[in-house]
Image (tube, rainbow, N blue to C red; front, side):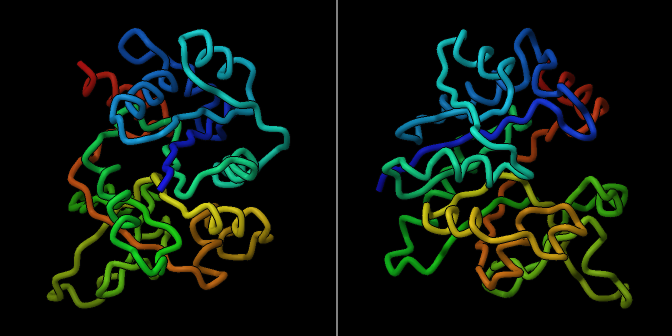
Length: 242
């Protein structure tokens, strides 16, 4: 099984433009993410896929591998689908460019899903973290996921789901981490499908899979790190890096 990691990296992020080129402990966020992914030693290859000459040059000038997107894309999955279409790979791990705290243990768990899936019943897998903080549960920048009893995703939302009408019921809240593992065929399917209303409304690409009937296996991790979506996140990341 050939497994590679692709890191989609868009320069003009809506909430925090240029965030991937911000300094984090003496190196840029995107370079930190690339180096952390390579350091896991889990992959046959690690490649940054970007629409930006600035990011491309940042990676390649530091000895890394990068590819330029040929087309404009609405999401990271589309960007890496274009990049892997003609590559000989079985499983693609999508590590977000704003995840400098990417760790080996969490990525190993995703890879293990496919190694154990002899019948190829899982199209993609992703990570989640148990959250307890009420502010984070209610924060629309924190994407929540609800599960069935087999840890397949039922829905993802920026809203606090499930809604606790009965406060006596013990339910867990999970934060979705934007790290995906795809079979190549599932990723190419995603690339060909048009966006449907749920994805368009929530601006969450993973909903496209659910709307088309695909199943997403969720894997719990205890490593949360910091996803850098805002300037405030960057400040938290700097403190954590120290």
